[in-house]
Image 1: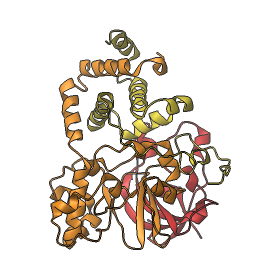
Image 2: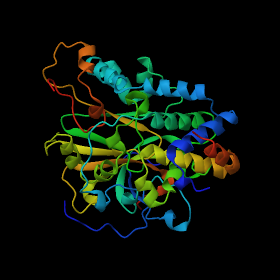
Image 3: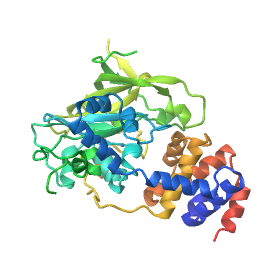
Image 4: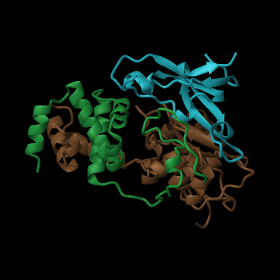
Length: 194
Length: 93
Length: 107
């Protein structure tokens, strides 16, 4: 059969039906899996970042073993790929990409955003990273080294951004509200009053 | 096992020319020199997993490359970190 | 960005890092909501992986095997669906007759 010519909606319905008939994936299993996947959002990663900003021991754990750090906050990591955490400093900024497909730290950030999966991001991030950052309105000073991390294998990578100025005394919850999805991939940095 | 700090070169090999394959070493790195920064662990070879073949566990490294080694129009003060499996790395004599 | 020719190497089509022809493409930074179709395909892929029926590596290989025109024309999850279906057919996990019949009777 010519898969290329089959309408996608019909093909999905057909696959769903065949998988159910063969006992491989029942509709309620699919629904449950959708619900579990939807429950993973960037708020999980943001909570980890905020805690790392206030708790040096947690920061150390996060950098040494991202999955264990996530689990300690109740984020389910069983069966998930290893989680690598990239620490930004005043001298070093990280940008995560998967040039070959779209590997993304889904367990802590949820589904990858459309732009992360796009041809333009995948092609340009490794060769014109400062240009990519500019597309997101972020200019990285030339004095800061930009390290691009191309996710090609088993690890999934997230960025631990620097805590912004003007947040002294803030609660973890308030700090977490500053941290956006893009900050944990490296296309932007957390800012107060954005 | 390759120690952190070791200078390596990514093999300038193109399995793509020899039939169906699944390669996780990006084209832009082939033949380029870099430095191993870390052994990330041992993982089953994706080149075999992709064809549901038995897959050996292989050492996986983080390797750092200078942008200037990769692109003629590279920015300054930039580098790239990529996960590469051991068989793809040659240690320079 | 100067228009520089890429090195003349047998690059696979999905292996996109630094490829010159994409270097001038703007990035669509807008959020695009996933559809029910997207979510269902994603969930099916996860279940197949968890049950060791089909790995994420097989998914990727199946996507990479799509003809370039199809790869560029299809949406992200449409590529997944085609890869999953082709791979399961190739492995004999599902067979063409039952799939054709199901397509025929799909709403």
